[in-house]
Length: 178
Image 1 (cartoon, one colour):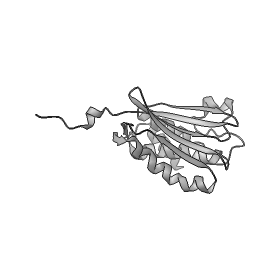
Image 2 (spheres, rainbow, N blue to C red):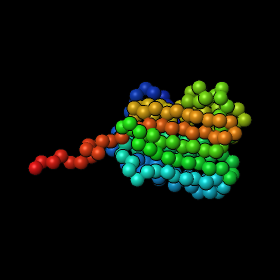
Image 3 (cartoon, rainbow, N blue to C red):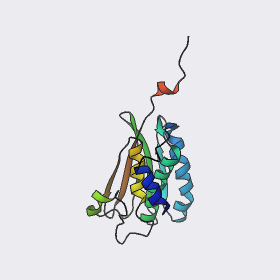
Image 4 (cartoon, one colour):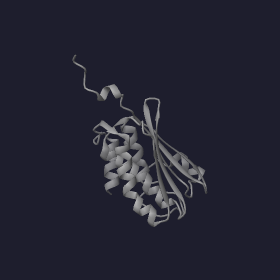
């Protein structure tokens, strides 16, 4: 119920993100580390690949932590013991692209075009929520001026990638008044 209410608010523009510069690492690491015990208990390797030169992004931290949490939660649900989840971030044309890739079950090709729609749940997938997590995630990313895409191959895993606007380094420095 809360997810549906949140989605309605986001889509209506009532939950517009409060954008501030946030170091990309600070956005990803705490969420990923919160999922690490669950991954380890399932026998799933969780790896972070965050380059040292990542810029800050314009972000509403709380909203984007929800997106990363949704993607990690899905990856854990759909990856069997012995599998891997890889979270990465790279600078790309004035943006930062953040990916969550897993070696899980994958999404059937016929579901890829509608996977971000409300209430879409893949049959025979491990049970989760009401099918709103990816729709909420997409709405949040779009409200941040980004895009989210999915690539998947049955039996080989899924990668979700979303983009955020990078903050120009000059915008973070105080003006030089000399």
